Image (cartoon, rainbow, N blue to C red; front, side, top):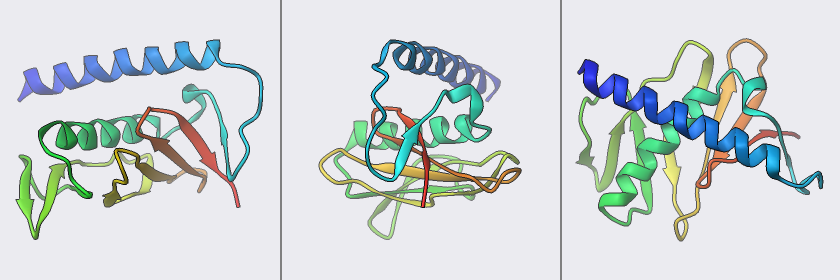
Length: 134
């Protein structure tokens, strides 16, 4: 169990470093739509989003699912009610994290609401974290 946690933690560190590196190299053009990109360091739920994204990617690596459920009451990936259910326990930083992720042609979005600020953030299949604005 400790080895899995360590491996997951190292994977998240590498992913975060990659995301920050890509963000630093991206253009200054502001994205249009209802979300605006931000640096991952400014997002208190970034780790939750990245962990949830990785759980969905792991599920999709095995099979092409239309939906993946993230649940804290399972310890191993399992199929229930025709859905792939992946283990995921949000941190205390998150008030809410998307429970059922819809996948459309490999594209998906996961949202998390910050318990501290009430701001809602989202991550897409590529790992881009953006703030959801109204």
